Image 1 (spheres, rainbow, N blue to C red):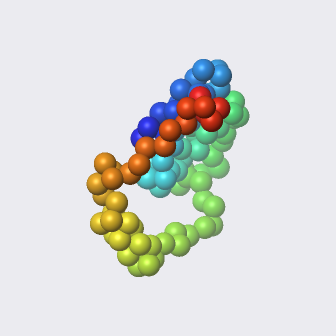
Image 2 (tube, rainbow, N blue to C red; image 1 turned 90 degrees about the horizontal axis):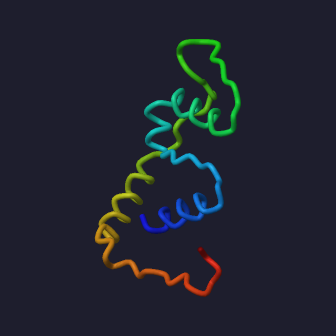
Length: 93
């Protein structure tokens, strides 16, 4: 999206490293995601087992989340209806 692009440009202009990581990527491959984060902060990481990291946490989403998502997508699936924000003069970028 354009807001993400603006952040990408700002970070690049200021010489700052960043990592683009989605929830879906993290969920699909937590080990690879953790390795990416460790690499970004120049940290070494070792795994004690081959099963991957285990936080002991469980997914908490339920049918309510699914209903909210479906309602949001039905109301806002046409992104042309969103009003663009004008950041000129606000000090943003």
